[in-house]
Image (cartoon, rainbow, N blue to C red; front, side, top):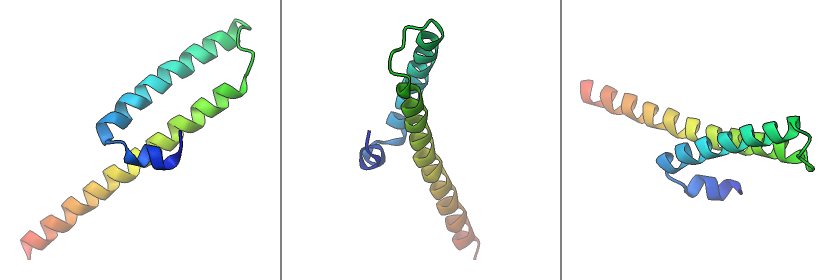
Length: 77
């Protein structure tokens, strides 16, 4: 999944997608342990995709928190 595709998703969609990808990663690890996984690079790609989504989600949460703090400071003045 491309970065622009991740950014287009809503926060709720991102959370659901992260959960799905983490389940997929568990399945990939299980397959790898049973020697059924032929392409082990899928493990690395899955971890990177989860990290990208978590990074975007974290950026959004920090931006919302900063916006709330500035609005509170503006209201107190």
